Image (cartoon, rainbow over all chains, first blue to last red; front, side):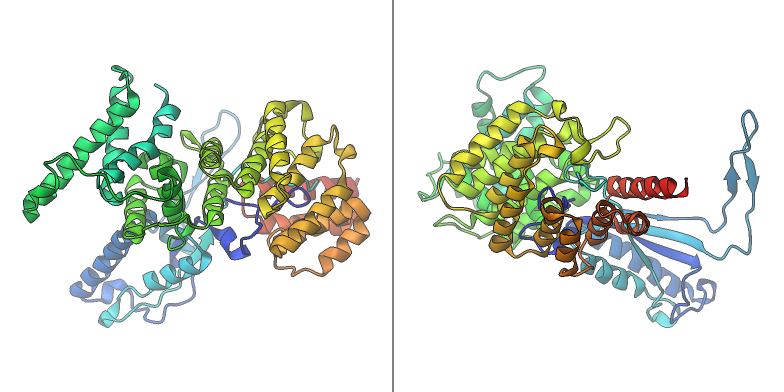
Length: 161
Length: 381
């Protein structure tokens, strides 16, 4: 990813700062819990089977369409409960704890996209949030959009000490 | 097998298929098939005439694909006779290919992908790995790009600036996967410089060589960033610096200054200093002024503020910085540095911490976090 090198050279020359977002990867994070309430937040187990099918179809179509536009990287779903694990000292087995029913923020899954701009990432997150729920109406759920820190090595030679 | 040789033959092979009447999209697919086949077959059975082998294989693939299509459309007449050459072009084939792949109708990521495949001769898999996306995604990105430029015809050269921007993006992507994109960008820029006589092409090539010369010194063994001032200058590649400087001087002598030549001049002044203390910041600042006149980019003015700080002192640098929008990427990092130079370590430490939160790359974040930690520790002791 192009980066400017303060005091050394100006690698962003001729490009606007939005173009600095060139080909950035973003994570679209879907929460079971922890995000603000969706507009249409009837839980899935109260939908009709057809509504569930329509929802799943929408998600699959969305991923397929992104593959077609060359913007899809990955999509995964997570089980709702997890175990906490930590190191417990040399020669001892790790300590485990949980799952905790009261955990506030629970990640349901994610999609990773590779897009030309932040604006495009927002646009796609908006589309994904429009997946149909109860009554066939869009869920309007809140998706969390997080940028990946790029791993580029080339032009990050800040002379900032 | 010499993969670089194989890749360098790609534009020529594509040009021959084009002159035989193949359309760009189909010809490009056929050449890609031939490249994949070459990577598979050549190690055991290297051809005596690599280019001839590629042309024959690609042409056969093209005919197969066209026949299959023609069978559907009943248009067999297209393929059986020895093909007539296409209309004579005023623009060199290779050059035309660069313009097509960097066409302004393409998004930057599409232009980069198409350039790497059609001009660079990389396989879809190699490009996908380099950009850390699935191969299917990259394949789609490339075929969409080809559909976008289908029908574009050149009767005169396009805008070379669009091509340079694409090559610069490739260079900045660095290296991940099994392809070194910085090296590849240099190769493609060198090839472009051979096809067109243009001082800005030379300027970009010089800039890349001068940057690349410092690559070994830029990263510590643990992967952390080494700032320019702290680099072991004995590890700079002097041959690459000498070549970059020579190309730059020849370009500057033609008196058609552009932004890449100005950037290369700044890089050359850094390369010329035997130690960080010997850096000619006054001259570097003059080049930044020149660059600001050429581009009027806020990022240039941000970098210029650092040069002002070095040439005229940190207070002057901070004054220059105050005139700029503080939402600019890396604005906070620059402010942190100038405050540190000015001796205000508390402010510097706080700003380094803030800058780390805004850093767009992992290496920069870690670097800035270390700077904050260094100052915080010093102040607590």
